Every structure is written in structure tokens, then in C-alpha cells.
Image (cartoon, rainbow, N blue to C red; front, side):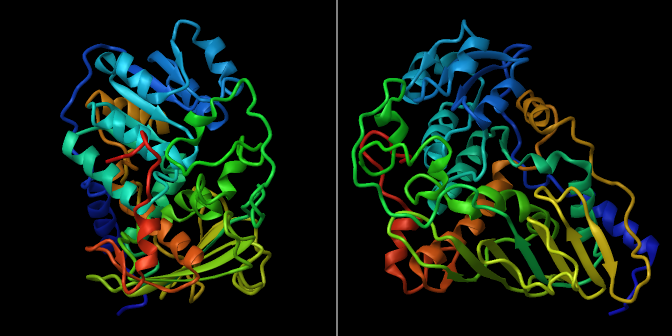
Length: 434
């Protein structure tokens, strides 16, 4: 293969990939009945408050959060919107007049709420990671497709011009055939590698513990779990990988048009019964497909940092993504892949394509427009479902402490029956996705 790519061929290929970016998005069949969408917001504290404000130009019909204290700002901002602690009660009361749902809860409740809303025909915005389990990721993509809904996962970096330019460059072959990807994060920034609390303090008056616990196995309340601290616990969160991979991995995953890995190997610090380890290193193997070479991408989090020479002696920042191809490397030093530094192997300048992807009106605005049948989102559930599934396989390997040989068609880890309970979780009564 030539070490150079002629510019006319490069731009031609770039244009072709640009036209195909949203090809997998489902056709939106259900259009709203009014100029402003009727939206319900589930989880309205923290990141949920940001998302609620982002859709405040629509009709915010109802709010839901089992933590009344965390919901105080949203309730004050939307005094006419009825407030619920139980998402099921909200959907029963208002489902017929709703057009869309925004889901910003802890990871374990994404799928139960989002699937209940989508099965009622509601367009859906859901925070990242899309789901807690692999089965849930498949169900979310399937229902969105069957219902023809406008969907968006909350990895806002996909709306940035720099991210789209990076995806375009990878699809156009700027680096030639890619063999390695390295991705790392400064997370966790919450407690992990800890034992389950043994004391049982009283539930605060502002917290509806049964509704917050939701589909997770029964356990007593403890302040070690919330707010935000839930990310480090197996039953509620998806650890550093779930928190950040749907941001930092997406540039390479989308740009290289990856699908399901066939093998996932993990190393980690000491494992705990109930919480994620202090650090992990996970290697995903993707087979060759078409013009794409077989490649491995390696994920690093917590105390297991990349080797010091990964960037040729340059200081390794807190988070980043390095894509290694036959013509050189692409390095992105931020969480969203919105900046890239191209480093040709032979020192020459890589010819990069002219912009071909549509400019986003903004992450939330893109989804709201799609709800009205105007355009498509870049991170619809048709992309976000398989992407999240691939990400979550890393947690499967970490928790089992075993190499995963993944049978994507059967949705099984070959020869590891103990993986089944993590691929398809058991749900506490009243909160099932099935």
C-alpha cells in the first residue's frame, strides 16, 4: 500500500463517509402534535439539572426524582410541573400527553425508565452510559428502531465540530490501516475498592429509598451510595469505564466503524465484592473487516496508567486517546475527542479532508429537532446501543477476572456461564425491563 494518499482520492473518500454518517439512524415515524414538545424529565439533580435546563424551551410537563433535596432547583424553576418520586406514576398520569423523555438517573435505572417511556412511543434522551447491562443496551436499540423514535445518548462531545472532523479523518483513511488504540482517563474521582457498609442509618426524609434503589437488589440505605458516589458500586454504577468510555472511546469507535470485539482481557488491582477496583487495564480485540485491519484497543483507568513512553516521552495528560496507524498517529488530549494532533510517521503533513459532516446546532438541540422529524442525531441508540455493549464487556472481564471470548450473535461469553447474570441482570420486583 502506498505510504501517501493523494488528496483527490482522500477528499473523495471523506465525502463518501460524510454522507454515510447517519445511515444507521432509524426513520422517525412519530411526529409531535404541537410546536413545543411535551417533555418529562427523570432525574433532575446534578447532570439531570443540566439536561432539564437544556430542554426548558419546550413544555416541561412533569419532573421525577426520588431525591427531593437534589430536585429542589428543578422544582423551583418549573413550579407548574407536577413532581413524582416514582417514574411509573409519572408515566401513568401523563404518558398520553407526552412527546419525549429525558433520563438522567444513576446508571442502573436508565433502561427501566427509558424503555418504559419508549414503549409508550416517547422520543428519548438518555445519559451515558446508555445502560447498566448488555441486554439492556440491545433492548434500547431494538425498541428505538421498532418504534421509529428520535434518540440521543448524552455524550455531548459528538456535537462538537472537532470531534466530527476527527471521525471524518479516520473514516477517510488519514492514518492508513489502524492497528492500535490507547485510551485512558483520570477517573475514578469517587470512592472505589471499598467494602460494603455494615451499619444501617435511617433514610433521610427527603429520599424515597425504594424508588432510588429501583431495579437493584434489596439493601439498606447508606450515605456511601449517593449522591454521585453510586458510580463506584456494582449494583448502581458502571465504574470509571462506564462513566468516561462513552466519551473518550467514541472518537475511535465511530471513526474506525467498530462493532463487537471478539476477545476482551482485563487486569486490575484487588477485586472487591461490591465495588469496582482502584484501577484496571482492559484490552479489546476487534477482528479485521473489509479494509479495516484487526486491531486492539487498550483502556486504562485509575491507578493503572499507560506506560510513560506511550507518547514518545511527552507527558501523558489525565485523559486522552491515541490512535496508531501505518501512516502515523492521531492524539486527542481531551475527554471528548474534540481536538486532535496528527503526527505523520515520515514527518510529512497528512492531507486532511475538507469538512463534510453537518454542523450540529448543539447536542440537545440536535435531538429536539430530530423529535420534530427534522434531521437525525449523531449518537442515536442504533449507534449508542452497540457502542455501550462493547464498552460494558470490559466491566464483565474485570468483574469475572477472566478473559471474555465474546459471541455477539448469541450474546454470551463462551464457556463462562457465570457471566450470564451480569449480561442479563435480575430485577427487583416492579422494576423489570421485560
